[in-house]
Image (cartoon, rainbow, N blue to C red):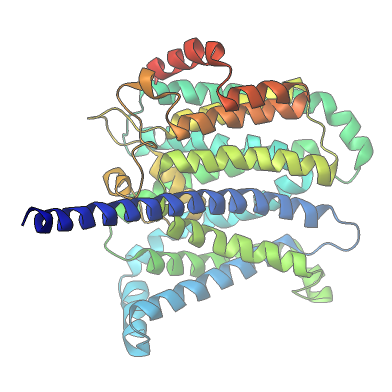
Length: 434
């Protein structure tokens, strides 16, 4: 009898353990997908924009990405309606035509996203990939400020500190780049550092505003995210075509819309079109901590690949600045203490993908995560046990190892747990601050 009572309990425990292992795998698969998407888009754009020969028109690539995104969202809506064309058409007509006021509201973020996508090409064409990746994290600062001003959200003390560190890190990287600007101009006379810097700063401002505005629209509407992306895409295609005609109209009329398109250019367009939608799906198994890891690790990947692909030089100033940015991104992504108000990270997420259905569902995400990822109240005793915290420290050490090869030995010692005397006081102090 006792054995019969014990058997169901054992089965439930085994099923729970199996589900936990599946969720853990999905969590790290999500992390890998986010890292690859973040790093590959920047590196691939930089690669195709610096190749010798005829360049494709960036404005046409932006329009083509919007076309692919709209077609994908239409297919997803059709799938939701069980391939009923009639129901899909009725839904779209009702959402886009009859509810035209809601549709017109999306003209503003669509205009900004179109501008942002074009500025991204300009910035990456004129800045090293690693420098762009670090500087582009200013979008976290702009998103936070717009969230405080427009949505009346509050930030924790740690988040304010992380924003200051973020700004300081980006400033240090710009100082380093200013020192190397003369050499870079000699190497590539067709690149303009100031044009790239202005483009990335405007892109960060537009990203922050559009993300917060889009979050506000999502909160006040019951329409699905895919319908919203169709509405965004319609305006995006129209505005993109207007920008294409204004900037490259005569050249495209002479050479053609697909001039300069290669297999690599198509890969960039597909990455840009489907990247945001992919993140929206993947983020179901992640949270802001993993998103922060993905961003931090993508900076490392972009830096390493830039060294081998583009001959990028990493010195002490860049290492210090990028290290501050990585630490700030991770600190900002940490959840608030219990009872705190929601952070604006969800708005930044929506600006990144313009398709993320989350607007503050932290409790829902906890079900998909092992407890080691979540911040514990007893931070002193969990520093060496938490894989998330160990990984964040490892990211910083990997970045410093790029600057000095001899630092690799220290990285290996710390990773193996040998440097306990260094780990204890410093990391325990960071844990108390968080």
